Image (spheres, rainbow over the protein chains, first blue to last red):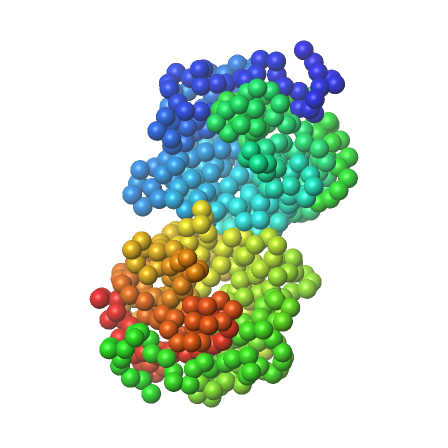
Length: 311
Length: 310
C-alpha cells in the first residue's frame, strides 16, 4: 500500500514492526535500535538487544529483501568482563552504526558505564568477526557516526556530547586521537527539536552535501518526545549547514511507536540507499522493537532545502 | 620562611600576609580575582590570574612579583575572550582557570572556555606572558580542569582533565602525539565515598615530577546542604605509567578555614591552579579562595610526599 498523502515524509512499511522480541530465538528485555548496511546483496542489521539482566549487546540480523530478517543467537559485540574496562561498559554496548571506509566497515557504538556514555569503534570485513578498536572519546558523548570518507585528508565523525544537547564534529588522522571538535547543529527553540538533538544515521555523500537523519527531542511533562529530522552538511566543511528540515520526517504515531519501555520514541541508527534512490530507513520504536519506513533521497533533500530557519 | 607544622590545621601552611591579591589591589574595576597559575620566569614570579569583570565573565590578567608574595597587577588584561576567529563562539561567556606548564622551552596554558555550548578545554601558548597565541580547542564540551604534564610520557603528551559523565566528577587521563588531537582516555581518580572528596574531584596543579612519582595536587568536593566544600588533596602517580595511582593522601592538604576562604562569591572554596617548587625544596601553592581572592600556602615538598604514605 502506498501512502502518498500519509502523515509523515517517511512511509511506514505495512508489515511493521519488522522485528520484535517474539522473533528472537532467545528471551530478552527489548530491541532498541538497528544499524544497517547492504553487504554482498544481503541486508544486514546490527541490533541493540537488552538482556533480561539489563545489559546491552549488538546482535546480527540478515535478510534477502530488507524486510524479513533472520536474527543471530549470539552477539557480535558484547561488553567485556576485563577488570579495568568494566567501569566503562557495565551497562553494555549499544546503538551500532555502520560506515563503509577504505574497503572495510567500521562500527561506532555507545559504551555505557559508570561514567556515562563514551564512543567505541570496531571494524569488520565480513560481519562475522569484529575487531574492537578501543574507546575514541571521553564521557559523556554518544551517537557517534563516522563519515564514509576523509574530509580534507582527515577522518571525521559526528556525535552528541551530553552538554548542550547539540551535534558536534571531530577529526582524526589515525581514528585514535581526535581533535578539532566543532559544533554543527543545535536544538531550535520553538520547534519539535527544541530540547536536544543527536545524530541518527551515518552521513551519506550526495553531490549537494552530506545527508544525515538526526533525532530531535521535545521535553514534555510526560517525558521526552523523540522524532526524526534530516539535514545536509557542506561536503568540504560539514560544520556548515546546507539545509535542515523544518518539520520532522517521522513522528511517533503508531501504537508500536507510542507504547513500549520508552514510549513516544522513533530513533534510527541506519538507512540503506538503493540504486534508484529509494531509501529504506530502519528505526527503533519505543525502544522495544524495530520498524522500517521508505522514502527517496530526492524527497529528503527537498525537505532539507525547504527548511526556512537555519541553523 | 618554611616551617613544619605537623601540629597545625593543614599540611599546607598559609602565608601570614594572605590574601596576596584582593579586589582593592586591582588597577581597574572588577568583581573578583582568583584561580591564578604561577611560573618562575627569568627569576621573576609571574601569576596569570582569573579576573571576573563587573559584567560577569572572566578573563586573564598578569601579576608580577620579586618574592612570590607581593604582586603588582598589570593594567592591561593579558588574555580576553576571543571575539573573532574560530575560538569566539566557544568563549562567549568567558575564559577561566588557567594552568601553565613549561614544556619544550615554552609555556602552554590550558584554560576553560565557556559558552552557551558548555565548558571545554582550550590550549594557548606563550614565551613571555605578554603575547599569547591560541593553539586549539582540545576537548569536547562538558570537560574542564585540564592540566598538562611537563614532559612527554611514553612518547606522548599527557593531560589530566575532568569530564562530567552522569554527574560523576572523576579525573581522567588522555594522551596526544601533537597536543591537538587527544585519545586513549582512561579514568584515573574517582571521588571517594566516606572521605572529604566524595562528590567530585578535578585536577588542580599541573603534575610535578618528584623522586617518588608525579605529585598531583587536586581539588575534591563534598556536597552539603549549604553547597559544596572545596578542599585540596594530593595523589602520587607512577612516573612511567601515570595511570597507576601509587598513593592517595587520606586527608586534605588544605581546607577552607580562614575568613577569606569561607566568605566570598563562592564560599568555602580553596582552589589551587599551580605551584612553584623552589631550589631548597619549598613548594608554594597558589590558590583562589572563595572565588574572590588569591592566596598562597607553602610546605616542604618532602612533607607532601610523606603525606602520600600516611
